[in-house]
Length: 138
Ligand SMILES: [Fe+2]
Ligand SMILES: [Fe+2]
Image 1 (cartoon, rainbow, N blue to C red):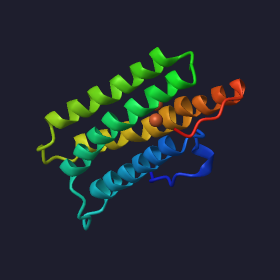
Image 2: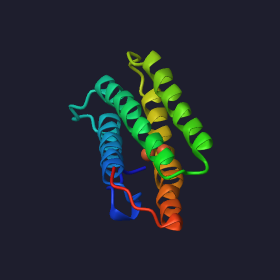
Image 3: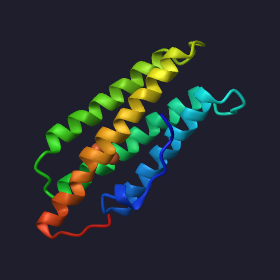
């Protein structure tokens, strides 16, 4: 799997949330480099810590946004966020493990999250907003 660059196609029509998603794509690339490039200076534990911060900040804003636009699948969507947070916690337990496998597992998890959640579920928020004819930049 190769790092993907964020593009307008992934926009969910909210600048702040799009910026958060761009940050996620960067974190994915950093982890990809850390795992695949022997010369990388990226530190796995730093990336893990940044992923934890990303989840805490981004999910809060995104859930507020869902309330703002009266999204009708908030519960299910927020449940996926909770799974992501739990997964990061789980990886924190093995943060000092030297072997490569858990790092590859995290990379795989993030890749699936990017494809399934950000490009799939989050994108539905923009479609929902369009259906309602609402606009929001907060
Ligand atoms: Fe998101
Ligand atoms: Fe989300």
